[in-house]
Length: 251
Ligand SMILES: NC(=O)c1ccc[n+]([C@@H]2O[C@H](COP(=O)([O-])OP(=O)(O)OC[C@H]3O[C@@H](n4cnc5c(N)ncnc54)[C@H](O)[C@@H]3O)[C@@H](O)[C@H]2O)c1
Image 1 (cartoon, rainbow, N blue to C red):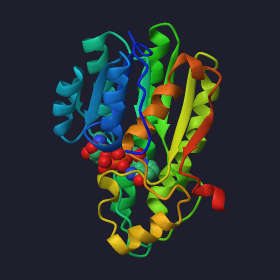
Image 2: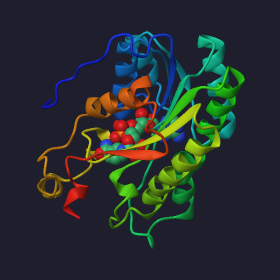
Image 3: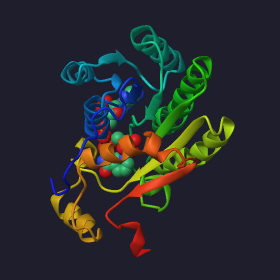
């Protein structure tokens, strides 16, 4: 890894952090980072590998399909039953099938947006309800994407979710300001399973379009998430923080 990591011990001590899509990739790195900074971590995923992550970080795993509102509510209840509260809720899970719109089915659209819009909204809703019940303070972190800002062929359903995440984050930041902050993270290319399917020649082209000359590691996103959720970032809300190796700077 090019970037050096400096977890801040005890920065999130005593806080309860929920990460969706925490079984691998960015979510897993976030689970590890928040645990290293003292948080009690609840990992939600449809992939049972989340249980191994939970064991590794001394947290808990709750199998959750984020597209099912009842399961999202059960996740919040399980978190409170286990850890007593929710301080930081990080919507991050995603599913996607990338095709030109004429080949994409309505079922695929519903599945992608079911996790990426309804799942995020439902997650924020149960988190805010709990935060208010326990005294009012909290942070919602939403993983968006550089694709919230630019178009790409074959990404219509996925990009619909990422555009919605930005707009939703702005509104969430207003609902209970200043007590409950909401911030989106917009990553560029991150080295996770999500990009494994990209053919090597296409990947060379993608990397050539990134001034940083590389994909970022998921730990670099986790470092940003840990800062965003911290007290030092108390003035940061209703916005997106872009982590893209200057990809969008090209214009
Ligand atoms: N990797 C990138 O280049 C990149 C770039 C920009 C944004 N992002 C965003 O980062 C986030 C994490 O992506 P990643 O790269 O770590 O992907 P990943 O594929 O490594 O992990 C996604 C996780 O979400 C889980 N998941 C899928 N459907 C679910 C459901 N219905 N309920 C609960 N969990 C579910 C998967 O099981 C998996 O563990 C996503 O929101 C993605 O859009 C990724």
